[in-house]
Amino acid sequence: MSTTSSLSSPGRWRDWFHQRDLAAFQRVAERHWPGAEHVLPRLSRSANHGLLWVGAAAGMAALGSSARSRRAALRGIASLAVASAAINTVGKGAVRRERPIVDLVPVIRQLKRQPFTTSFPSGHAASAAAFATGVAMESKGWGAVVAPVAAAVAASRVYTGVHYPSDVVAGAALGIGAAFALRGVVPTRGQLPAPGRPPAEAPALPAGQDLVVVVNRESGSATAAATVIRDALPLAETIECAPADLPGCLEKAARQGKALGVCGGDGTVNMAAAVAATHSLPLAVFPGGTLNHFAYDLGIETVHDTVTALTTGDAVRVDLGRFRPGPQGPGGAHGYFLNAFSLGVYPELVRTREHWAPRIGGWPAGVLAAFEALRGSRPLTAELQGRRRPLWLLFVGNGLFQRVGPAPGRRHNLADGLLDVRVVHGGRTPALRLLAAAVAGPLSRSPVHAAVRRRRVRIAGLAPGTPYAYDGEVAHSGTELMIDKLPEALTVYCPMPV
Image 1 (cartoon, rainbow, N blue to C red):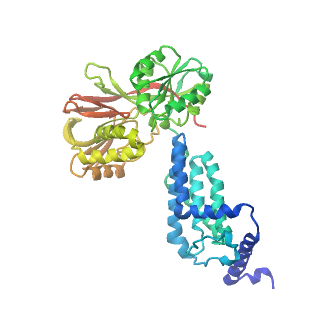
Image 2: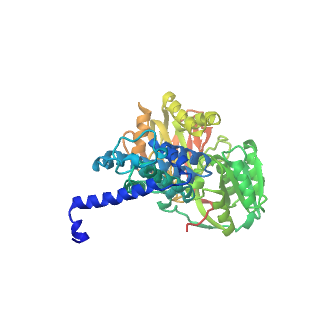
Image 3: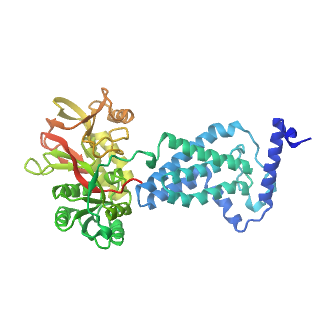
């Protein structure tokens, strides 16, 4: 009888496949793997319930020097969650395969607690593959670090005798598929369209010649970034100064070089942008703060991104948001913003977060600030575009933010000439109203919130001393504010998309 005819029935095909799978399992069980007895069983146990990958994600987020690391950690965990849900709800129930006979495996390799679920597919392999694939989608470097560990976890499931090889292969395939499925719903940063970038003329400054960089020594990771800047741009003059000295340092630097460099968070970059625009100088932004919204929206995630643009002279024009009167009051200059201007609960949130962040860390401080702001605040009353109303939040973005909700997200065009205006109307349950605005997203209207695009916004009838926030800084208003923008007023060094 031919092989083809002998495998014609489904039952015979399953028997043939199982025999081959069992033979592969026995070969692994009989083979001596030097050093593996003390490593693979422990590694397999550490991956129970995804604890190994949660720890890896936390380490990546803490040790990574850019937002790319945090995105990689978050996508890895999200991919793992999708894979685990698919395995536990569908995969295990679809094929009720019994576990291998553990007696075939040497006792030193066996797990102390044997799994009681069905064998096909391997949940550990699925989680490992999903996490590694998700991480690699955002960061090839971290992906190269995680991939060998994920492969070892998958192999450990056969080595310890709890899965057949086909269980592991199928689990890994499902994990990879889960990561790609998530990417189809939530694109990676590389999949998103490049921001609108009107090209600008700027001098090429190889090695930082004729560049003066001002570093806010108390801003995020700016001090560490300053060392990288000095190594990458040996001809640049790098000045570290305290926050109180920033205005003077920036003005002095603007008079000395052909371009102005700045390293710090969004508030520091805001001050530098105003100085650079006033002196008609191109601005080189080196991310050194906690969030770095403006730099990341330009595609600048590391010091070397800016170094590349300086070497080639690549630059773009961006809009500069403006509000009157500025932080100094009616007799002072205009105020400017690169990211957003806001009234309502957000300024209080910023103030509380800045108070607690040095003590408990940025993210816990943000959660505490949100809770405090929503619990103790009352809606402000203002006249917006000629109509008086209570407001929980007024958000004015410099360009359209793509992420839904009233909080900042990514912008695809930093020179669109428009303001992204979002309002959460006053009333009870501010948390639910903010959530409704987040779900509805930009360019929407409802009795609870509204999101529109404008070239200018006039706010009147404010109580004197009403707090407002701009690029993470907090100041206090008079009775009236006028918000508009200066189209393409700022030239910024920016690497061109490949």
